[in-house]
Image 1 (spheres, chains in turn yellow, orange):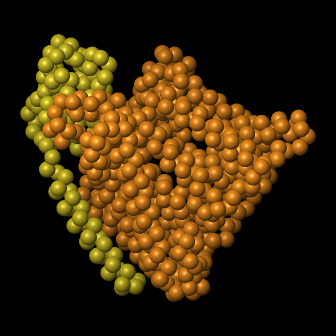
Image 2: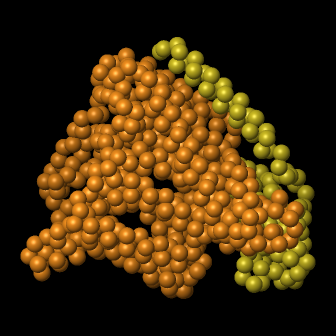
Image 3: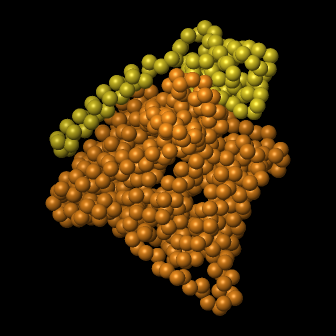
Length: 125
Length: 482
C-alpha cells in the first residue's frame, strides 16, 4: 500500500463527505412538513397556489390532506398509490395509509383533459 | 405527467412574472414513472464513497504486474451448440422478430393512443429496447445484431439484388477509418434528445417516436447503400455500436459464424482502438448524468437558461428545448473534459504515447462506469415499466381497448422493490462498476507502458478520474428529484 495515494484517498473521502453534508443541509430547507396534521392544498384555476408543495410522511403514517378548489376539476390523482377522487363538486379529502415509500406526484386532472402536478408526496421508509 | 408540466409552465408564465420564480421544474420527461426513487440517504452516500476508495486502494495494493486481459482468450463453444443458436433458420426468425417489432413501433406510434404511458412505441423503445437490450448485451453478447431490423431489411434487399444481378451490390465508398464510431455518437445524442428534450417539456408523443424512427431508418438505409450493410451495422449504426459496446464486457461473442466464450471483461480492450470510441462511452455517461441531474442539481441552471430564452421571446417549448440542449452539451463537455484531463495527467508519465492515442486506448475502461450509471439511474423505472410492457402494453399495444393475451387488466405494482433495495442496488452497481473500470485501466496501463513503475504511476491519474466519476454518480442519486 503506497502512502501517497492513500493520503489522497483519505482527502477525497473527507472532501466528499463534507461536500455532501453541506449540500444535504442546503437542500433540506425546503417546504417539507413532517406534520401529521391534515394538510390543505389550494388549487385555483387548475393551478396549485404557492407552487408544488412537498408532503412528507414515514411509512405507516396516515396520509391526510384536503384539496380546496375554486372550480370543478375532473379528479385528483395520487400517482403510484393510484388513488383517484372525483373533484367535480368542490373540495376533496384524502386519507390513506402510507404503505409504499418513494416519491409520488399528486396531480389535478382538469375537465379539459390536461393535468398539472399540485403536490409531491414524499414517503420515507 | 409530461404534458401537464408544459401546461403548468404556460399557466404559470401567464399568471404573473413572480410565478416564474415558483416554476417547479421545467424538466420532467421522466414523469412517466409513478414512483420516483428517494434520494440515497447521507449515511449510505458516505459509506458508498468510502467503500469506493477502500476498494480502489485494495486493488492497487494487490495489483498484478503483467497484463491479464489484453489477450482475448476467445474459445469456440461446441459446434452443435453454435449451429443450434446461429443456423440460418434462427437468423431469419430473429430478423423477422426484429422487423415485426420495428413495424409495431411505427404502427403504434402513428395509429395508437396519444397517452405515452399506454402506447407500445414509448414503453418499448425507451425501456424494453434502450435499457433492456443493454442488460441482454452484457449477459448474452451482441444479441441486437441478430434482431437489428435495419440489418435484416438491408440483408434481404442486398440478397435480392444478388439473386437478380448475380453479384453483390457494389458499394460506392469504403467506410473511412477516421469516421469510426462518430456517427454512433451523434445517433445516441439524437436518441436522447428525442427522449428527454424533443417534447419541449412533455414526454415525446408516440407520433414523435414513429417519425424519429422513420427518419433514422432513412439515414440508416442510405448509409448502408453507401458503405455496405454489415460495414455500417458494425461501425456507424448507433444502436449496434451502443449495445455492442456493452456486449464487450460479457463473455459471449460470435466470430466467423461460431459462438465462443472468453474471459469476463477481456473483450473490452479490443473495443477501444477505433476513433470515436472514447466519445461514445463518454456520451453514454454524460446523457445518463444529464437525465439524473436535470431534475436535481442542474434544475436551477436549466430553469435560469429557460427563463432567459423565454425572455428573449422564444416560445415555452422552444425555450425548454434550447435550455436543455445547452445543458446536455455542457454535461457532455464536462464529462469529456474530466476524462481528457485525466488522460493529460497520465501523459506526463514517461513513455506515454501521444495524448489522443492514449485517451483512445483507455476508452473501454469507462464502459463499466457507463453501465453502472445506467443501473443506478434506471433500475427501478425499468422494473416498473417492464411490468407495463408485459401486462397491458402486451395485450393492448395501441391503447384502443384490445385484450390479445388476457393481460390488459394488469398494471404496475410499484411496491415490487422497497426504497432500501433500490438504494443498495444503486450503490452496489456504482461500486462494482468502479472496480471493473479500475481493473481494466490497470491492465491496460501494463500494456501501454513498458515498465510496471510507469504503469502504476499513470494509474494515479486514472484512479482520480474513476473516483470522480463514481462519486459523481453517487452524488447524483443522493440528490432530490425536484
